[in-house]
Image 1 (tube, rainbow, N blue to C red):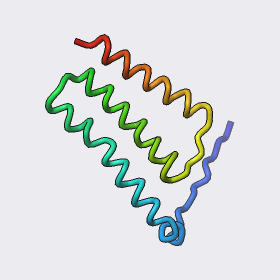
Image 2: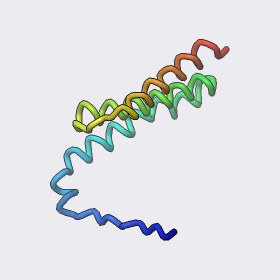
Image 3: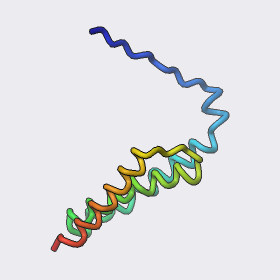
Length: 94
């Protein structure tokens, strides 16, 4: 079975056309992860791991509301599972 991957080239015109959205996404991606990185220096790992997973949800919400990305059922179910896991970690960690 031969599976070949097509390489997609990112055009400079695409980057220039969408520079504002790319910059906003990059900023919020970094901003959504920084609290988790800082938390590892001051707190318990299990609780901070839940915070880190929440940063993924925040990044997804930025994409949904600011960048107007489409979200399907799989993304919604994944978000609910992450949120449920975070709540369980917080409830049952010492």
